[in-house]
Amino acid sequence: MYTSSVIQNEIIELCGNAIQKQIIDKVRQSGFFAVLADEAQDVSRYEQLSLCLRYVDCSSRKALIREDFVGFVHIHDFTASALALTTMESLKSFGLDLENLVGQGYDEAAVMSERFKGNLRNERDFSNLFEEAKHLSSADLSVPRVTGRQINCSNIPGDTPEVYYRRNIFYPFIEHVVTEIEARFKSHEESISGIQLILPDRTQTTDTAKKCIARIGEIFLSEAEKKVVVSEYELWHNHWCNQEMPSTVLEAMDRCDELFFPTIRQLLQILATLPVSTATPETNGLQDSRL
View 1: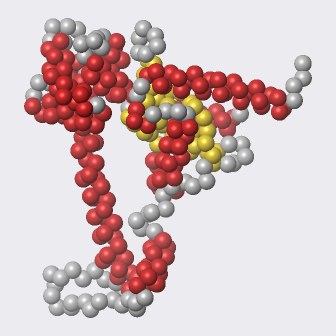
View 2 (view 1 turned 60 degrees about the vertical axis):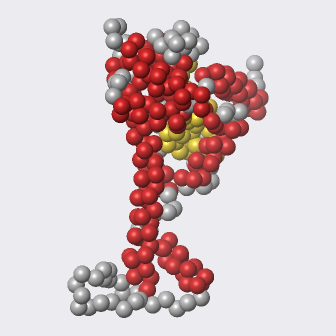
View 3 (view 1 turned 135 degrees about the vertical axis):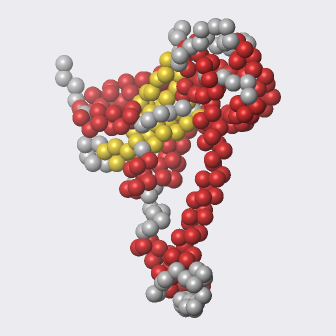
């Protein structure tokens, strides 16, 4: 029986929508999820974003980590901010609650080294910024006087006003901003890495461990759950003193009684959901190019 290409495409689209709906329903049922994204090209050489969702499937007896492809999104702006905005809008269109988004995985090498327009050492971009600054200030900028005899003065060479202000003002300011951002998120990075302390073979009763668990609770848990997470963690540590400990986070989830350890189970699920690579969207991009 012959069917036209239009009907074939409609059937494929309907099947894709049905599969996507099943995946989204599973993600909603799971609660927490992470998004994985990578750039890819279709057969027409149009740039698109391959989106996958990572979540813990608890529909069967044993918990399973799944990374399911949910679709391609055509993109025209390749800056990091534009890719992030496109990803968030796509998740909203799926009907997912972004409050349950606990992790994001991107191919940072492509975004930062090839597409990122705010390159610190891009002299052409700075030249445009410098000309715009001169226009806004309506001033004829010149190189300040340089001290010749005092050897301890900061005399960074600059033959022209543009070179001088790029080396003495622009670079130090950008480096200062980067340092401030790193300091701002360093505590969150340390807290996220410390979430492994909830694994039975890594639990501790030290004050440092308890403070780390409390910081993790501040990031992921509700107000009511924050108040009990440390006490629950102490019970969780004592629970495994005389038992054989599970070797993986999924085994720990399967053996974690949600009635007695509800917040610990949530943190275990979040730990399992956090992305470790972008291999899945990269694979989907290759498969799409074959199709």
